[in-house]
Length: 181
Image 1 (cartoon, one colour):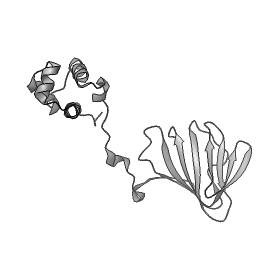
Image 2: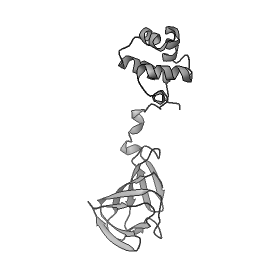
Image 3: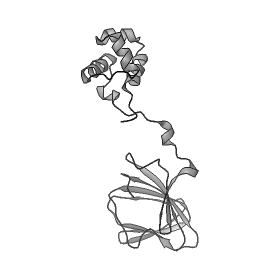
Image 4: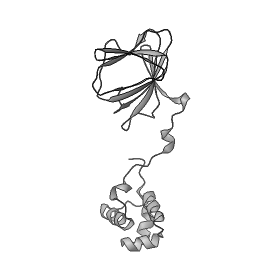
């Protein structure tokens, strides 16, 4: 809740409606000084005042309580990715973190290695795209060789395993929802 500034949101909605602070204060039946203090973050409005402001501005009350998105935090620079190394495999997180409903990562599978000893399952649904090389994919009892440009959807809880028994390294781009590792 550290990115919530109710006052800034009130001010933003007020300006979007083309209202002066005096006009909004009059419509909401609060004092102009109280509205000024709310907008400058010097006073916290009561729930009742928020409800009145929301109704006056024609916005849902909860819209004042949503966290602000810091767009800079959505960018992941290629030299600043979070890396997870498990045995020979390297995972590079392309998403900023594991919050939200989706995570995307690169899985680098060197020659003569695999994602696990046995096929594993997880609760998340996954879509994978082979960026480089070839890789063998085990889905339940079936085996498939996927090459660069191929993709696969792996339903939740389906046992699977990636294996690179080819000469060149493989790179797999995948997204999983909900985020899980």
